[in-house]
Image (cartoon, rainbow, N blue to C red; front, side, top):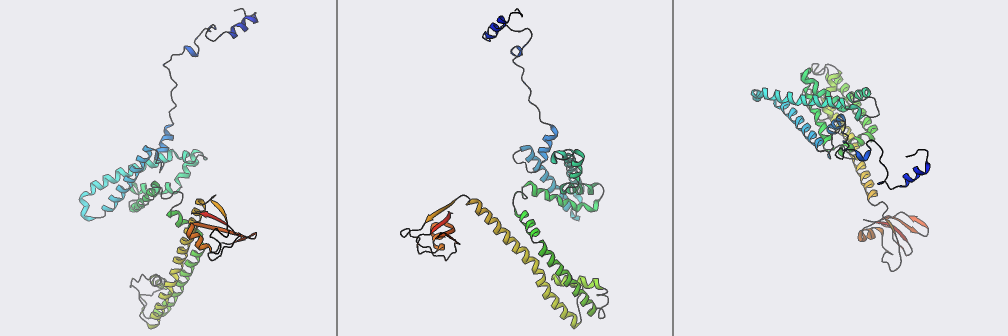
Length: 354
């Protein structure tokens, strides 16, 4: 083709694609048909992080890992308990082998969680993420369940804390559950609870000093100092009654009766506070659920003489028609829908259907 002839170039461009002269060399059409673009494999570290993440129910390998974790937790705790029975000393080697296998599994899990810590905390650097995980609640629990096997044999009881992981596995601490209710109630009532605890401590201190001053001369070995009185007041206030320290004087016994009565009332204070908090929290949840269910479902009804609503109270209308009356408009005034409010001709009812 003559490069100096622009008309020839234009004619070539106007040709159909099948008639155009092919350029030298291999183009896209001449590539082997069997060659396909390889799919990009996921990062192994990312995949491991997805598997060891707790509660990934839609991922079968992750679910299997969760079940394996639960099995190891129960096996570890079971051999820990069975090892305390002298009758089972003959199976000590088996218990030790099971303990070793489960602890090795815990070590592997702990190492993998450290390795993938930056994926758990994407906003931090790798070192900061590892440090954050080690100091987190799960990281501390994992560490304390591993170390006793190697160094601190007397602290194997910390392995029972692994049971907390099971709560996560079954999503007990998900969006809103009983554990969240407990923590929220305690947090909201923290001031009242602290005040009641302070009252209990003051009562314990006062009763211990009183019983010490009354009983010290009669039984100096039992009430050697004020601390002995604190132990007695604690067992009396909380009605434990171990019986290792009891008053023998008349004044001391009268003081014990008074302390017992006061203790019952004082200990009931935090119980009542927490119970009231649970009731309030339950009502709050019910109200939120009710608003969510009936949201955007409000309707209005005009009361006329032949409608059958005039002359009836709100409670009867709600019970008969499964309504929840939210307001009553009468003569441009909005009335609170009390149960005993009598509807009149010309009223407008704002209601929701249950």
